[in-house]
Image 1: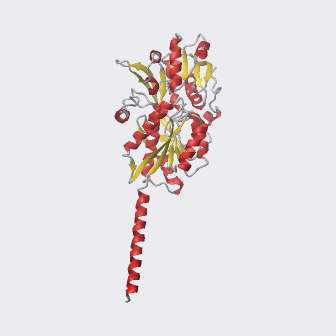
Image 2: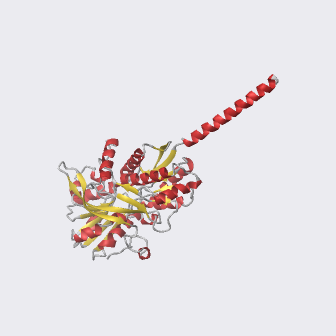
Image 3: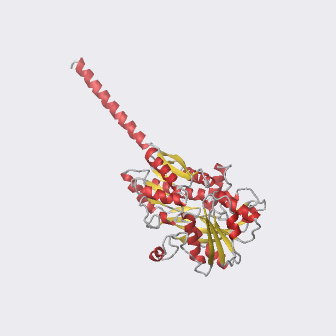
Length: 421
């Protein structure tokens, strides 16, 4: 054999080994590629505090999986909206189309969710899992087949409240003061389904824009002859209303929507706190819940976020639950996001997840069937405010136990539906 021939064989053999090594390295690299998850929340605007806490909840869920699925590390790509639907869609597009995330958790606000739902329909190979957005129509009518919500909608989060205030508190006639967008419409629908069926009346409705600072004109118009004010405002708006109602000398009992006396409101300092004591509210959590998972989540939250709110808000809880469900399903398929994520979405649909708010499963529209908690704001010995659990409604579906065709015939929740005059 010639020296030239021997060298040629040696070079070819070396090339084969190099190509083989390169393929093995590329395969290993692909296997170890990070799972990129987009997380969209309101880090600007009137719901900024709730958005910040929502991000904390998502991180807590990732921690429970030790930051990885199999050998693949989890990478969170965070984006901020400001509770405006067009901004939420723009940021969702950025996460999906520019940042190339595998799937997305979010958004936070009700109207944001409705807008992102329509965007989700245009990218069917990507998966969207809700954050906190609780508008009914996100999943009730014309849902996106690639969008999932493992938490309740606004109506589900009022389950049990109408019955409690009518039967226990003896409130028969109330006035509504509410922010004017899709989430509060859902809350009113859920409250009225029980309260009005028992004979209660919503005497008058006052709708205000999200971000309202001055409630004085609304407070001045509240009529006499009512038993309580049903107030659905969020974050800074809630602090403004409670402060101004206290300053006006208002004495009527208050019924709060889910965000009205949430943890981020109760953690705020000010004279309004006296007005908050005794407010009856309902939602996906109660700080008086003795479920071991809730107790454990609170401890993990306090350890990881000593500068947080002291206890998870409902925003932190909902992002935690939705992220935990997503990672549970992803572990089931061993991190496989191929085939346009069809296996992943099938696993999501089948996922039943144990959470601090009970066991959650999905209906045919990919909507959570959940427990709900009725609470009263109480004061600790040290003066801190907390949500004291007074009742729990179990296994609440999206039609509130009503046959689906009957429920849909009532029409979408809106300013005027239901009326409950």
